[in-house]
Length: 322
Image 1 (cartoon, one colour):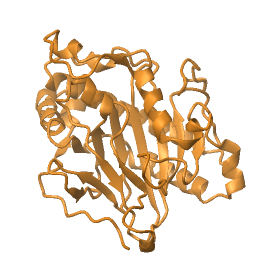
Image 2 (image 1 turned 60 degrees about the vertical axis):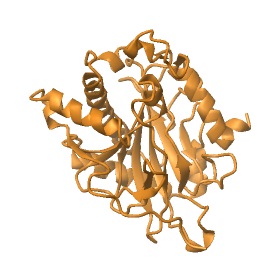
Image 3 (image 1 turned 180 degrees about the vertical axis):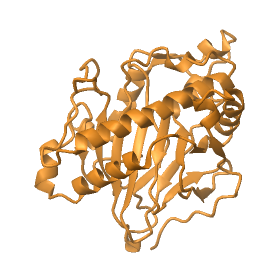
Image 4 (image 1 turned 90 degrees about the vertical axis):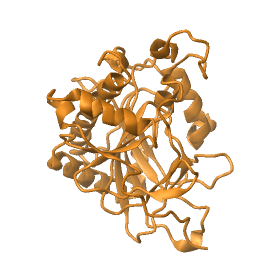
């Protein structure tokens, strides 16, 4: 029995990039070059200078813990909808067909306009479900969403510059994004559950870019280029971001979407704030937009929306049952 093991990360395996010169416009090129180098390597990056206020993060964590500590009957009032909004209980996600179900539970929300409305123009977009028993949660969650989404926008501009593209290349069709955010709660994982049990099992992320705000507990593990698992511990004052599958596809594999997992061996609860950035659902993911028609494209074009529907159907039990 026991936990799946990972070794300590080498100091330079996941670089730390300060994006302040990108955000303030003082030196976007140097930041873009650093982001590009990291994305063509392991595909994980610690981000300093992200600009999300500490009180915004703290308020979000407070709301998240209040929600996850509530009675199951209360959480059931916002059980995940067919549009992937609301509470996804423990056992609701499985990253690989043969794997055990994840121990995590999540609360998921996404883009909404200034009136609190969300367009229902895609299978993975519909009204957010806010728990009536936590009146502050919507404001706290949406404030965090806007800040984290802003960080994602700066990063996408940096990636574009690093690839020699116009800064807005990845954002031209991102006015009504499919982006989702989630509170992800990991209970302490008993060692007797064994090495094949995970908070979230080994997987790559589905969309374009993931922005993760870890707490101090740790447990994130990343598979390096040799196939070895390494710890990706929280670093105070940073976010950790990673290239996801659609950005790897968009860049014809130049940017790496790397497997990762969570093992919460701390004996304490763990909470993550996650933003999954994706553009509008009809955005075409096509590497020839970047590299031209040279005949070496690995994957055919696909829309962001179609790809995500396919991936979600494989990973989430409630979608299989529909």
